Amino acid sequence: MSVAEPRRIVLFRHAKADWPQVNDHERPLAERGRKDAAVAGRKLADSGIPFDLALCSTAIRTRETWKLAVHEFSQRPKTVYEERIYEASPGELIAVLNETPDDAQSVLLIGHNPGVQGLAEVLAGSADEDARERMSRRGFPAAAFAVLTFTGSWKTLEPGAATLLDYWAPSE
Image (spheres, rainbow, N blue to C red):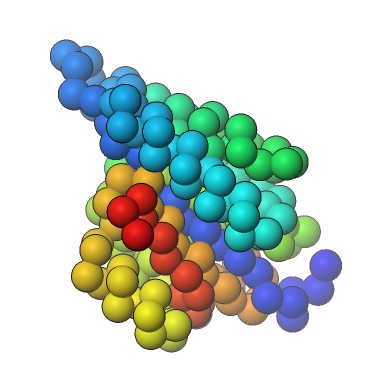
């Protein structure tokens, strides 16, 4: 694929987690989270974006979110469980995305706040105004996702380089 073709990044926050007496990395999804993850998966599947790669945090709640969401897809993309996504800042998430092979056109990143929301805000140099307004008003609740596009190599992805195309949250 040519680096001149638009690429898509979907930033997907894990669904609602439970608070049992375990360390943060091991927290599972709550019942509502399991339902919302499947609904978000259906919305992502309905988007028609043919994901080439999913980058998922190693935390239990992100892995469970991805397992329930991808079940709704007609085709499962290659999945990489990446420990650097857990508790990552927007800059650290950009560094992970910069390592994406250029043959991947569409990437789904399943992670955590505040990093995922911060990354959406930092990357979006321009935006569909309705999507920007909804994301600004709602923030990035559990199971929300933002769809961004940019042109160029993954190595060139940097703040302001993308356009926010869409935003969705479970209560939308």
